[in-house]
Image 1 (cartoon, one colour):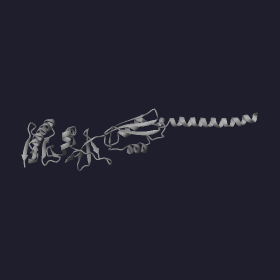
Image 2: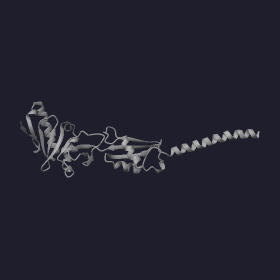
Image 3: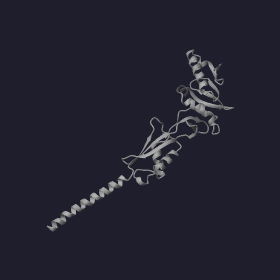
Length: 237
């Protein structure tokens, strides 16, 4: 009988050891990040990719699948992401199932400075070009870091107007911080003058464009002058 009990105890002991080992492993896994999930705000172009974000986190030893939750610093993750040249804002949080999730809003370029090879973003700041995506924005000519604040109000207004974004392909700075606009598929240039009374000037331009289009006269002009604000002065070819 005693021999039988010994034989019975051995399998029970093995089962108990296996159970304890599995329980310990499960608890250990529960303390680790199961996955890093990168989410970009819907509709945004990928000036930075999910792969690039994951690589950034891993290289800086702040987050990766398998890292212990106790040493995960969410504030550090957010700081690292927010310091990226292409990211405007990032939020990081840990879900109940052990996933590190990041929600990323990318910076939005509204113009591209020609010659210096950088963007002007929607906040009026310099933004480097992206190796992943090229934005379709107006080209900014004769602009550099010292005068981007002069062109910013004009380009920002263009970016928010559907008609203007469809028709304006470039903005050139002239002496005296005056500007000239280059048009898509039209042979004339638009002399805008200084970046002031912007809404009034563009409303006048839209009215002129609509009337000239109806009269089939758009191709007869070589220059359209908006600098006077309350009127549009046209020069024929």
